[in-house]
Image: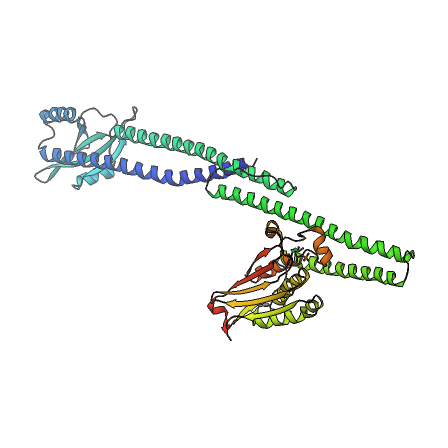
Length: 466
Ligand code: ADP
């Protein structure tokens, strides 16, 4: 299981950290503690032995022996006095005390000695300080003060045991916490893994509970957003295929129907035959248009079209577009006008795509108008370039306005067919406008006409005045 791995990793790291911190810390505490007590004992023992050595005038005097034995009792230390033949003359009760030849020679030469001994057989440990005793410059023996260090060793081992115990206690506590925390952390991770696997299998309705505001919470939120986005994409794609197959079916059924009529000779005269041939031609044109539009739109929706941005004069583009739709307008008896209210800057845009926007909107205006004027007005207000394309046509019902930029959305199903549209024109326009950082809005009244307004924000550094 995954959390086992996390527990192991975290547990291992915590263990190593503890060892790295606790071992040197224990060592240092131990050294400081034992060093402090040893120093105290050493100093005390050496001072005493030095003082005793100075006090003693004769080492053969039994009074001296009994006095030092009493002193040993009083000070809780042992005292041993050796004569110049290295023989014990006083011993307050330490068995097996001996000094080496070298140490005796040191004393003979007037130097003190220190050492640690262990009493045999009861294993008591002592710190020993020996000083030479001399009268009128002659070495007459040496006095040794012995302080038991058993207590220190006891305390040191108690402190050491305490350190080891508390170290282990803290380690187990930390491991316990690690275990709990990593389980708590890995539980949502496991849920996320499960959820993403479900997403991979196509279950896009899966959602995670976002129960915290930390990185885990935001990761869960990101997975939810991803699922939602995938879901939206899938629904969109399904609708797209449903729409497109529906749209293709209608012209194809016309083509099949009229081709069959013609093949089987079900027509009265040549005029009727020409009429059917015209329908076949129109429908195949519409099919070509539809396929081109679908292809364009899908490229735009996936941001796969490359725009060639350059400084363009938008009124020239409007003029060009107007001249291209002029014939269509004339056929329907419509007038067109272009009004540019003030000096326009050159703006950064793709001239071909901008013309396409104009042509689509103008074609719609012509298609859905039977009389009146089609007006194009361009205004520059230093922050925005605004383009209005207005007609006095049949208008769009208010409740339809929010949907007309959706692909294949038609105000009345038969309406645009009668007028020869594909239902993709405005969807393409919206995509093209947005790809050029603009926005498009619509205002319309049934029977009075429709006005599309394009707006392109212009940063000062992005335009050049004409
Ligand atoms: P179509 O190719 O069918 O015209 P569009 O996407 O260009 O598709 O337009 C969507 C719908 O919006 C059209 O079917 C039409 O009903 C309506 N529409 C668009 N432009 C106008 C207009 N200028 N006047 C009236 N209705 C319009």
